[in-house]
Structure formats: C-alpha cells, structure tokens
Image (cartoon, rainbow, N blue to C red; front, side):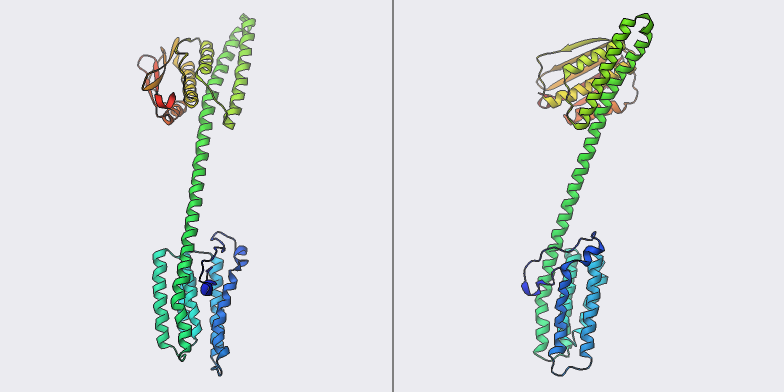
Length: 383
C-alpha cells in the first residue's frame, strides 16, 4: 500500500516499497508508515463534535488500531494475492461497519482500494474498485451522521477509490514488467553461460583429443625405439614435448576465448599425427581458397576431430583430405581406407555437427569402405 499519500496530491507515486523478497527489517524501515497519518481523519469526527456520544472516541480509536495492524501485516508480508484476506477484505468490512457511525471511517475503503491495486491482477483489482464504490454508496444510506457532514466523509472516497486504486494498479503493472525484464535478462545470461560452457567443452575435447592422441602414439613409438634407435627416440621425445606445449598454450587460449585456428595449421598437425600412427596423408587443397575466419576456424576444428578419429580408431594406411568450393558450398572431405563401420557417434562428432550446423552446413558420414566424412558449408557463410 504505497500510494495512500496521494489522496490529496492526485499525482503518481514513486515505488519505494520493498519487494516481496525484501527482508522484514527492510519493510520495517520503509517510509510508507507515514500513510497511517490519514487515520487522523477518523479521530477528527469525535474531536470536532461539540457533544460526542460516549462510544465515539472508543470507536474511532479501535478503528485506527485495527487499521494500523492490518496495514502492518500488509507491509511485513509484502505484495501478494494473500492481501485479499489479510488487508483488503478486513479493511472493507471494518469500513462498512464503522462508517455509519463515523463518516470519516470511509477512508478505509481507499486503503482497501490501494491494497487491491497494489497486489491483485488488473481485472480482479477493478472488480474490487467497483465493489468498494458500491459499498461506500450503501453505507451513506444507513449512516447515522447528520447532513451535510455525512457527505463530506462519503463523497471524496467515491473518486479517490478509483484515483488511488488505478495509480497503484499502474505501479503494480510497472513492477511486474520490471520483474519480467529482470527474468528475461537472467535467462539471456544463463543461456550465454551455457553456450560458453558448451564452446569450451567442445574446444577442449577437440584440442586434447588431438594433442593427447599424438603424445600417446609418439610415446609408444619412443618406447620401441629407445634401444633400437636412440637418435630417433630422442627426436620423438622432442616432438612429444612440442605437442604438449602446444596443447598447454591452446588450453589457455580456449579458456579465455582467444583461440583461433586455420586449415593450413591443422593440415600440418594432421600430417604429424597420422605419421606417428603410420598413416600416409594425401591432401587435395587449393592454396588460393580464402575463407572467413569463423568458418575456417570451425572447419579447422572439424578437420582436427576427424583426423584424431582416423589415428585412433580407423587402422588405416592412407587418409585423404580434400577441400574445394563452388558457387554454392565449401566442401571438406576426410576419407580413410580403414575398417569403417557404423558405430554410434561419440561426443567429438556430435560437437563437430554442432559447429557445422551453426554455420548452416551439414555433416555426412559413410562407413562401407573405410570411413568418409563429408562436411559442406554454404558459400555465403564461408567466403
């Protein structure tokens, strides 16, 4: 109930009340307690009456105390639909019972309208405004307060129920929109975080799978050569060290999002990895082909994953890599003469498909005679 103070000002209030998630301490310290000052109107009738009846002061004080309790419950519990039973209904009932004897008790209808606009959906709040207006009109008919004093207490609430209620309803809608915007922003941040985690996971898989495969194969070869050919074993050990350092540098750049690769670099790495596995590499690549950096990066990582699979699983003797382009698409083909098969795809190929799909391309794998992986990307996304 944050705009009862606008009963006389008639201007839009500032939303300074605590949110439902705010702590009890925050709600206790809110400046909205000043709105209870309007209960002084209830005390004005017995005060200005020349000869008040014995029950007028007790009635006015009881109304003020009960209203203050209901108002405190509304503030401490925050904005919610529960205010129907903790604030709106009790205030409306109390106002209906007290107003026939104290015309200024009709201020409770305005408190109830403010609570309805502050906590209920638009349609329900407007129904409450109609009901409170009707209730104010009914109580004027049964009031014991003489004219014209009766009208002084009843006529202003007929307008202020709607003015204050609609202002609170507008503030309620604004708070709801702000909350929706906050939720949308949180969702965008969450999706961005998930996408970044997936990117790092794919990059690390592609990177470490390729680099560790090369290290393992060279380590096995070094064990075999350490006695038979120490000089070559030393060269293989140096190559392992170089591969490990490259992997370390690539991990660091992947985590920070700065890593970028290209086809030529990956072809050189592929030649070294396949040579360590005893596979002959044949390349059909147009050196004059120029690709966009993002497309070349994604195709380079796809090439790395495919070559790693050939070295690990294919048991091939020859691997052919081709890259060409026409007016419609860029095509990357990695084919081997290994054991082939139709085994389920692992996380590496799944990540490869995700990369290519982001570029609007497609991945096709055949495994009848060896394995052939064909990756096509629309030319507008690649060049």
